[in-house]
Length: 146
Figure (tube, rainbow, N blue to C red):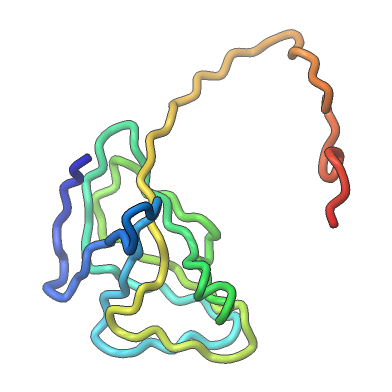
């Protein structure tokens, strides 16, 4: 699948797959100098590019597992959605969940992006819903959390 893109900064690095079977591409910070994220602070990091996804597709911005596990750095909105009709610069809102400052360096891989197809839902009201073994059981109803 081909996706049109526009570099908004000459130093922008497009998202790229790091291995042959990777599902997500690494997203790179397009900053001129290091940016410190204080403990429990959120900072919007630019990527330096915009894109035009085809109708019926979205891009999701997700955490890089290493940044999250080792440093407590993750997208502030958990998973960000980029819609097919958005044409502005892609930014990643990073949150430092740790108690120590974290420094984002220029060209650092800061998140992952996956492009996927989605369905558009049409709601249809019903008088009843089919029965399932779970029924209306809520949080923890399918077994132990531990």
